[in-house]
Image 1 (spheres, rainbow, N blue to C red):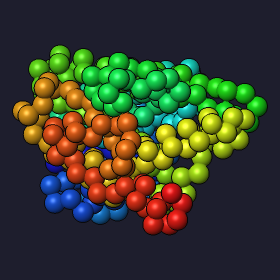
Image 2 (image 1 turned 180 degrees about the horizontal axis):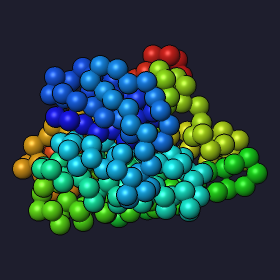
Image 3 (image 1 turned 120 degrees about the horizontal axis):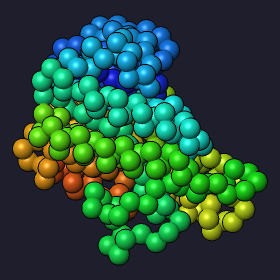
Length: 289
C-alpha cells in the first residue's frame, strides 16, 4: 500500500510514519505538512497546503494512495478558534474529494475524544459507555486559570469530519472506506502514563476539587500509548471492510484502560484492534493510583 500521512511533521504523524516504516504491507509513505520535515526510508516529504483545493503538490499523491491517515489540523487543540476549525474542516473535505481518484482507498480520519467531550461534565449514557451509536456531544469544558471555556469549535469540527467521511464513503459506494478514530490522549515523545498530569487546558488549576478529580480521571481514562496508537492505525488501514455495518465506521481510539467509558468492543470487532496497555495498571505500578 502507498500511504499518505497528513500532518506528517506533527506528533501523531511522526509516530504513524515510524510504524509504517516497519510494516511489510506498506511500500511507500508520503508525508504532507505545511512545514518541511526529514523523511527517510520509504517516506518522502511534501510541503503543501491542504486548505487550498487546487494545490497540485498534494493532489497527485492523494489520488494515487491506497490509504490516507489524516491528522493535519490548523490547530490540533481545544483552544482552536472557529476560523481555525473551519480551515481544518476544509482540509478534510478537500482530501475526501480527491481520495480514491485512482482506485479503492482506505481513509482514516483522526477524530478526537473531543467529539464526545461534552460527556466529561454531563451524565454519561445510561449504560455508561461511549460508542458509534451514542448521540454526539462535542466540546470539552476546561478551566483556563481564570474562567471556564469550551472547546466547542474544535469538537464540532471533529464531529462534522466524521459525518462528511460517512457521506463520502456512502456516495462512492465503498470505493472509499473510512474509519474515524476518536483518538484519546497521546502525548508527545515517550508518552507514559505517569506524566498525564493535566489536560493541557489548565484544568490542574480547577477551582473545584471535585471537578479537578473528575477531570483527571476523564483524561487518564482516554490515554492512548504509543504502542497502542501504532496498533490502532495499522488495524484501521488493513481491516476487511466487508465485516463492517457500512462503508464508514467510528471507533474509540484509547488504550485498554480499565473501567473507562470509551467502548472498545466495536474497534476490536470491526478492525481487529487489540490494545495492550492500561493506564491504571501503569499508574498502580508507579504508586500513583
